[in-house]
Image 1 (tube, rainbow, N blue to C red):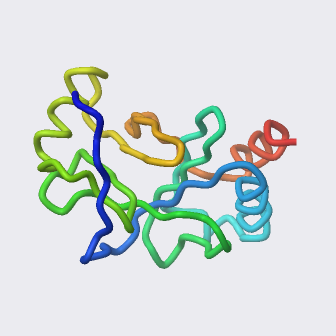
Image 2 (cartoon, rainbow, N blue to C red):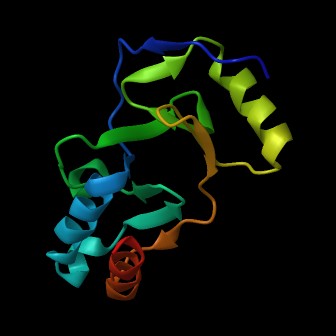
Length: 138
């Protein structure tokens, strides 16, 4: 696949997840640890080296300064993109190329850092997962 050119979005979608790095990942875990078990229902995480991805309904996603949000492409359900930027190529073609490269169906295409992350291994967020994350990020 050729190098992607990213463009600013005119139509920011409602977030379905967020991506945290570095100190913001620590802040995210602290914010989530302050919630009760019922507030974690419907949230799932995808921990990746140097990234922590949290997926769930927009009204359950915490607001932390500097965290960036992602959402499913409206016309390509298996492709997740930042809410503020999008590739300059048609989303269905980008998704098909990424599926061929990864062999996975649900993918986050992210920039800054530039990564492709499979999301189909997301695990439900609960107290055990939060304790593990807190230890891993320490």
